[in-house]
Length: 124
Image 1 (cartoon, rainbow, N blue to C red):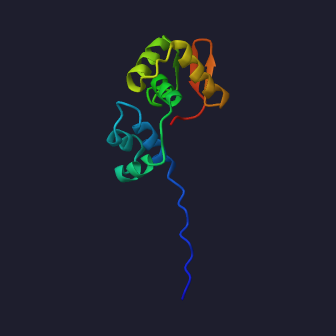
Image 2 (cartoon, one colour):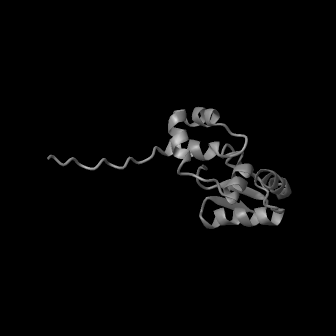
């Protein structure tokens, strides 16, 4: 009996993973994410099985308009906290949101300088 090789594990297309991540943000659709990243809906649906969106990632999504904006002012973080409370029922405060954003600063994803922010790397 011939032994075949085990199938190679495919490296997921980074754009599929980005589309899947952004489509998890409330208000975003798979169709919109696919159009934005130029990928197929089936691939995004399959990628959903591997992904979950954390509350800090939702905060970053809210700040950056799901990654469409790469810089801006922090403004009233209470608005982001209110949105998080609406979508996740987690009782976040503006101070909580600031702490969540600080985790992305520590990871090198986000730069905070006073009231200004800049994405250091594309998100998602």
